[in-house]
Amino acid sequence: MSTGERVERRLTAILAADVAGYSRLTGLDEEGTHTRLTDHLRSLIDPKITEHRGRVVKNTGDGLLAEFSSAVDAVRCAVDIQSGMVQRNCDVPEETRIEFRIGVNVGDVIIDRGDIFGDDVNVAVRLEGLAEPGGICVSSRVREDAEGKLEIIFDNAGELLLKNIIRPVQVYCVRLSGAAGPPSRPALPLPDKPSIAVLPFQNMSDDPEQEYFSDGIVEDIITALSRFRQLFVIARNSSFKYKGQAVDIRQVGRELGVRYVLEGSVRRGGDRVRITAQLIDSSDGSHRWAENYDRELKDVFAVQEELARTIAAILEAHISKAEAERTLLKPAATWQAYDHYVRAAATWALFQSSWKLESLLETRRHIANALSIDPKYARTYSLLASTHRVAWFNPLNEEYLNPSALDEAISLARTAIELDPNLPEAYAELGYNLVRKRDFDAATSAVERAIELEPNFVNYRIAAVLINVGEAARAIEVAKTQMRLDPFHPHFAPLMIGEACYLLKQYDEAQRWLGQCTARAPNHQYGHAFLAATYAQLGRLEDARVEAAEVLRVNPKYSIRETQKRVSFFKRSEDMEHLVDGLRKAGLPE
Image (cartoon, rainbow, N blue to C red; front, side, top):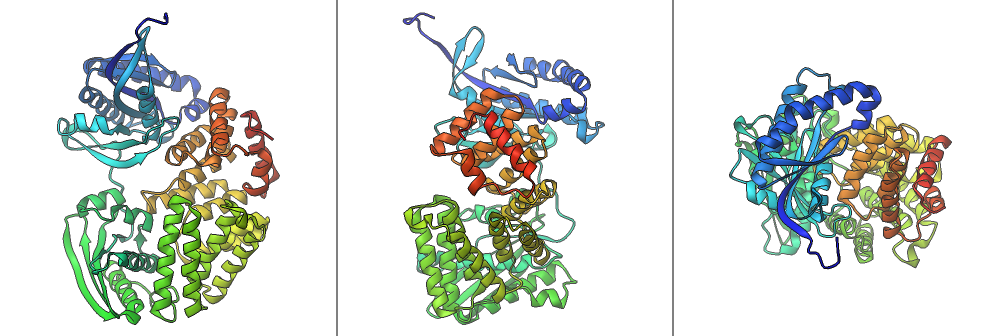
């Protein structure tokens, strides 16, 4: 094309599709997978694209790129494809099913010799990578154009930063309804035991600054309910996604996969607190129980305990007395210490979303105030241990380059356990830190104790320890359990699954999960590093180089040696050798 020639452009709807787990399927049966994929394309997908006035731009071996003149046509085609694949897979064993992920975007594209190029094409491809097998993800422009014209629902997945896309993209997942067929992301199935989500309570105090107090009470109620082994309790992270929203309880039940929802309000004034709570059946929106508590602030722990026990008794008639006695963590000696603790927890949550030094320092100030009132408050030591571990792991300034910070974190976690031997978060913190001292046996014992104490307490720290001690398969189970307890899980969950899959040499699965991690957290250098190693092991060296460049963009001083020294602590030498091999193949610096 000459310099003066105008580039041809047009507005179009882009559909990107690929086969989930294609490398695994071909590894099981290369010829059979190829034959079945060809049949799906010839008998279902190509005809559907033609039927909805689309055009296949190109095939990519395990996927395709198509364009349509309207978003409605593109989404209708995607829905028909996924519904058709459900029917075609109904008699196929799950491990050999071919399932597509589909992404749809609308935008201005460059046309060149029949192909299409541009950022909006790349967005469609990234959306496809975010979709679940059998699912469809679309951009906000697609939702705006298609909503109300099709019998489907768009679930808000949030505003995400997609790899190599400068602007954030508002992502929606398609949920089918009515005659259109089964949902692409079905409502989560109910667990086989009573299940509940506790939504953020409304702050009814005159002072909006008291928001932290109502949030702290809800977190403690969640923690208290989680102690009952007979209950399935959604994690705080997912419950708080609904904070400040007017919600349909039935939709909450579908999205979180729970039968019951607890909501309420907190009003604090002077030395008194008024807490209201109501339990709702999410299947039909009916109220099952409601209560008001008007107490002195010093009795707030008794209210939390009464709430938890009452709800547990309603949901599960056979809670043992021993379990009931362990409902709450050991409370602080006075409510003033608790007040400082929940302030610390609130600022710590801000730090984890911003990684700003001032938030970490403010967290420590509130902790110091709590300990000055109650020096035996175990949870406070556990939280303080987390601040030292993070400071050691991600030095925020010269003050926190102190190598003794890790030793301090270990000591503080042990202090928390001495004060309260039934505190699962302290065991998880201890195990996560002991791994970095290569004390693998003690680390394993610590996380096993955390799981034993509270089956609902599973998080990335436990999965990370299992990866480090050579139990990658079990780490995947733990991370997937976390994702079910926390449907709006942070990027750490797919990161742990991706790392574990890499060590198990399940590279195709590793690429899928690590891709989700880096899409959610584009500045997570170790997510990019593992993804670079994964691509390298798959022989996709160009993609590996792109991810290696992302690592160096985030941290220009990155080195394989530093990863060995501060990040990856494997009990099995072959696991470290395997990781280093992938990082070197990807071209990362020694």
